[in-house]
Image (cartoon, rainbow, N blue to C red; front, top):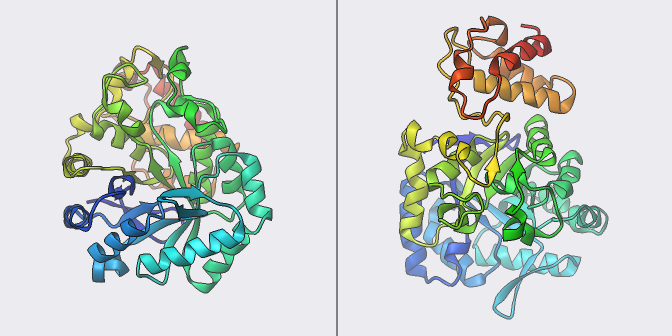
Amino acid sequence: MKYRELGKTGLKVSEIGLGCEGFNGKDAAFTQEMFKLALAAGVNCMDLYSPNPDMHKNIAAALGSRRKDFIYQAHLCTEWKDGQYKAVRDIASVKAAFETMLKNLNTDYIDIGMIHYVDSPELWRTIESGGVLDYALELKAKGKIKHIGVSSHNPLAVLEAVKSGKVEVLMFSVNPCYDLLPGTDDVEKLWAEESYKKPLLNLDPKRAELYETCQRLGVGITVMKAFGGGDLLSEYSPAGKALTAVQCLHYALTRPAVAAVMSGARTMEELKASLDYEKASEAEKDYAEVFASFPKISWEGHCMYCGHCAPCHKGIDVANVTKFLNLAKAQGEVPETVREHYAALEAHAGDCIACGACAKRCPFAVDPVANMKEAKEVFGY
């Protein structure tokens, strides 16, 4: 298992984490088996959006003494009522649900306190001014949560949250279909068939801005919906062609600021399919060819950081140089962290001899030579 820094939190998370939906309604024996497999593979983090008390108790029992080595990303603003979870915003319910969650998880702290389901800018402003954010900051001051996060499907909503400086982690839906759609308060549109009936071209600008802002500010991203609820793995994929689990995971894990994918496995086989990412070959991870052949979606002219431009005769990591260039262009300046990462590369854009070999290999008709010329101008070498 590979581990990544989660933004500026200081936490190191496994690339593959656990989602919790597959544990809802399952018994303790199922939970024990799933955790046995996950822990043996090196998984060290889990998202807990659901406040299901039985699920929490089963997870606590399965972890046992390993709790201190495991990272809980658990949600504020959810409560269990009448046998199902409900999003809540009134501060009394938020407080009561949090204390109940601690008790059921048999812990006295949560690693990442995730403010749940912030899918409109107006809701974020309400959270800022209505007591929820203040409560999260209070919990952090007391050590009951270590870091504050938000979960969302809408880049328009969480750009404000990320830019506020009060959020350290973002849980966001990341996959090659949703990434082409504009931000909306109506999450149902992300998987609605009608959203994909017209041609879709390239990454939505606000999503690109969100990823790049997170990268610049050190806000770590944990991914939900990497498989689009399973749709991307089937013939009914909105893209018109099925992807593999490994390809979906690799797409998500190559986006700026992404640290981990919370895999929503419902069976041992599904969990194994996600864990197989860690031993997959580069050919199995490669999503470029299938992306280029999507009948309903086009990424033409947009660098996917897929690495097909390699190898470079001069040793330039063309994909990473392009990523750093895009980060700088998105911010209108060269952030210090981007400058440092660029400087650490073994070869730089200025080393390009414009041979064009990389351009011939690009499945998306990008002009990497032009990108290297622009990067030399931006970075100075």
